[in-house]
Amino acid sequence: MSATRRRPGPGTIIVLVLVAIALVCLVSGILPAPDAGALGARITPVLGFVVAITIVAELARDAAVFDLVAQRLARWGRGRVIALWASVVVLAVVSTVFLSLDTTAVIVTPVVVVLAQSIGVSPLPFAFATVWLANTASLALPVSNLTNLLAAPAIGESPASFLALSWAPTLVGIVVPVALLTIVHRRTLFGGYRMPSAAAPSDRVLFWGAAGILILLMPLLALTHDVWIPATVAAVLLVVLFAVRRPHVLRLSLVPWQAIGLAASLFVLVETAHANGILDVLSALATDGHGVGQLLGLASAGALAANGVNNLPAYLILEPAASDPVTLMALLIGVNLGPLITPWASLATLLWHHRVVSLGVEIRWRTLMLWGAAVAVPTVVIATLVLALVAG
Image 1 (cartoon, rainbow, N blue to C red):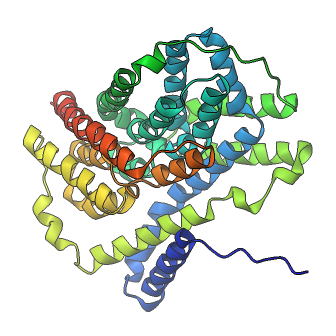
Image 2 (image 1 turned 180 degrees about the vertical axis):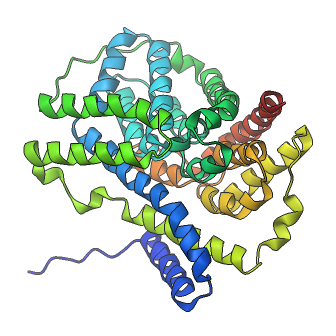
């Protein structure tokens, strides 16, 4: 009996169509060769980092690093949900800041949801925290979000230059969603839970090896300009470790082919539109002023565009409107803190929803969109006001 072939899903089909269109633009010369070459030089290290950090996160998950960390947090909470809540918030923020928003959405989400279910606590606040913080905490460092990696060279030569502008808006992006969730779910969060039993990793060598690599990698990502280099070294070390200890885990699906195809094709299509003057109409949004109104206008445009199409093409489309580091940061506030409303505004949100539904947690898109709007609007506005103060 022949095996049933798995048909590609709608998402895969859309990505394949976009890749095909992008290839036509490249081969036909619709995107001029000099522009294509400049684009390739710009995005190759960015996409290389995405591949490397995804492999690192997936293999660290397979080594039970995230599971053991979550269980340890539950033990430290000593039966108080609010203490566990604070620990989960810290975990989501650290994961997002150093390992990117997709790591939090795809890997941390199921860990904390299953943890909440296992101790008899509603998983809803924990699930919402991971998806909101995956987006809003991703403003912190260049490595936190693909949009940041694109903007970082124009903002400064080092991550410190980026952080000098991003730290205050990022704090707003963390505090506002967490405060809202704490108020809305106060009955759950100020209760108690049953202590989980202690667990040990099935392979201590893998666990401590992966944990050690992560511990060394995170500060390097915060201090290094070419972040793809330490990320690639970490990925190679983990692949070697797993090749020795658990080779069956190594698979081609560790590489995020679909995400890479989507990102690369969007890069080409938006660059083609820019090169052919199709997006020149957006020049009216261009500003080099640092007034509150000007920064709010750019951040709002970014948030609206992100919720309309997706945060990555929104950034690429509006990037020419931001002429200096401060206006670029305002745009990043819009495209990073703003895409909490529509399901397609951020790839991380779609990946997150698939994970929580597969774990038996029902969250309707309408509910997510209403609460997302309640969080996104004040977060973007306050973060932009704070940026104006910091930049002033």
